Amino acid sequence: MDIEYLLWLQNLRDSCGEILTPFMVWLSDDFAEGVLLIVPFIVYWCMSKRGGMFLLLSMGISQFLANVIKMTFCVYRPFIRDPRVIPYGHKSSSYSFPSGHTMTAAPILGGLASLSHEEYMHPSRINIFLTWLLCPVMILAVMFSRNYLGAHTPQDVIAGLILSVIVLYVVNVMMSHPEHENTFALLGILSVIAGLAYVSLKPYHVDFGANGKPLVNVPKMISGVYYYGGSLAGIIAGRLIERKYIRFTPAGLSVKGIILAAVGYGIFRFIYSMESYSVKFFAPFITELGGCFVIDFLMMIFVAALWPFVIKKVCGK
View 1 (cartoon, rainbow, N blue to C red):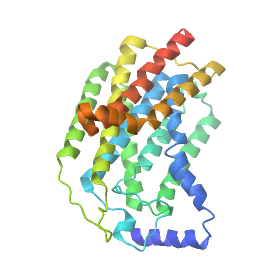
View 2 (view 1 turned 90 degrees about the vertical axis):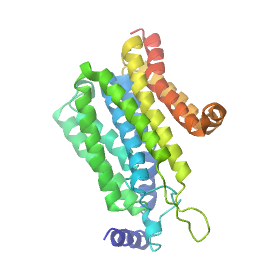
View 3 (view 1 turned 90 degrees about the horizontal axis):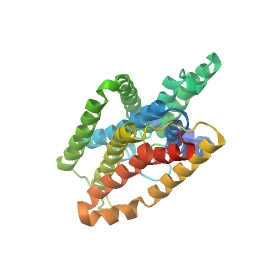
View 4 (view 1 turned 60 degrees about the vertical axis):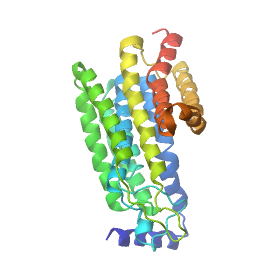
C-alpha cells in the first residue's frame, strides 16, 4: 500500500505539471533543513535560556536517534524497493526509515507549540491557538512533502513523528527536574558513546546496483551519526559549561539582541560551511570519524556556551 500511495502521488505530481513541486521542495529542504534550524538559536540567545535549550536538546536527540535507527533497520528508499517510484531531484544514498526531515521539523515545531504558553512567547488565547494550529499543520506539510517527492514512505514519516513526540516528552520531563540535570547529562553522553560504538561495530549487508555501485553509502551514513553524536554531546556539554561558569541572560528581541543573534548565527553558518575542511584537519590526529564528531561538538559548544558568553559581555547581564 505504501508504494501504491507514492505512485498515486507521483501521478498527481506529473498530471499537475509539477505546479506544487517547487513548494514541496522548499518545505522539504529550505524550510525543514534550513529556516527552522534558526528557531532554537533565536529562542536560546534572545528569548529564553530554558526554552531554547529545550528546543536544542529535542532537536539534537531526535537527529541522533533518527540516524542510529536508520543504521539499525537498514530500510531502503522506496525508489530502490520499487523502480516505478521516481523521486524528484537527487536520489539519496541513505537508508529511509525513519524520516530525518520529520525528526528535525517535528521537535522544533512541536517544541514551539508546547512553549506557546510561556510568558516570553507573549501568550494570549489567539497566539496559543495560532501556534497550536500552525505548528501541527507545518509538521504534516513537511511529512507530506517527503512522500510527494518520493523520498519516503508513509511509514517513514509517521515513525519520525511518533519518535519526535516521545523525545519531546522525555526532554520535557528531564528539564522539569533540574536537580537531576547532571545525571541526565551523564546518561546522555553515555548514550552517545554507546550509539557511536554500535553503528561502528555493527555489520552491514551491502547490495549493489546495476552500475556496480552500492545502493547505500554506509560509510557516509556512519559519518553522519558521528556528526549528530558530536552535536548532541556539544549541546549537553555546552549546557553544563554555561550553567556553571557563564549564566547568561538572553539578549531579548531588541535591536541589539537581534543583531547579536544574526552575527552568532552567521559565525555558526561559516563554521558549518568549513566543516569538511575541519574534518580533514582533525583526521590525522583522531581519524576522520573522530574529526566528524569533534567539529560538530565544538560547533554546539559555540552555540550553547561561547556565544552566550559574548552576549553576557555585550549586554552586561
